Length: 234
Picture 1 (tube, one colour):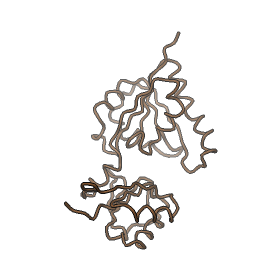
Picture 2 (cartoon, rainbow, N blue to C red):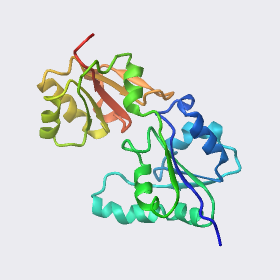
Picture 3 (cartoon, rainbow, N blue to C red):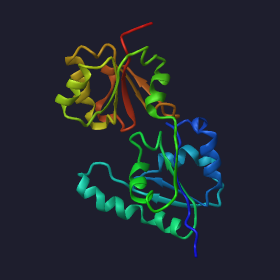
Picture 4 (cartoon, one colour):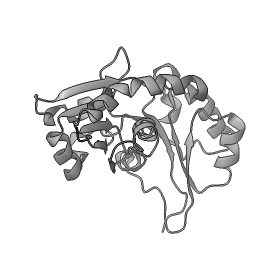
């Protein structure tokens, strides 16, 4: 009888390879199979982060989870994309699935977890998320004492973004991409633009910090964030 492999969801951090945890590194180098999310026409960011730590003897499995899909349409695609991972686990091989940032904080590993964790022993290793990395890259304390922090996905409708921004002390607006102009206009409307700070690809070699009003909307990547630090200073 074949013993099932173990599934590991490993957070690899926001981009700097030195922000990988010791546990993540140990599991990564011990695993016979390494899997990672990758767009069909682009290099996997998660793999690029850990490339120097790969042994060169591991089986690599790339999968693609398209983001801009309705949940019902995405489900069947996601079910199919995780099948190669399941096949290795069923054959008794442990699989480390890489995930940028933290696996359970808007991480791609969540979609693997919901499909396979009930069938295979699964362990999740936290990673440094962009929510922690971006304020540090910008050099600003985010929150003080009892400040309320709100994390907002930029694709939300404008009305929802406005409602949430009006009731919080500090905010992080993620997944900017093509939604940047909408978000920027809302910040000006609410009088928050002067506090808002923009950073893209925090901690990566391509990290870029640009004044909000100088950002070219056509060039804003998915991995960009606007930080609105608390106005409180203690």
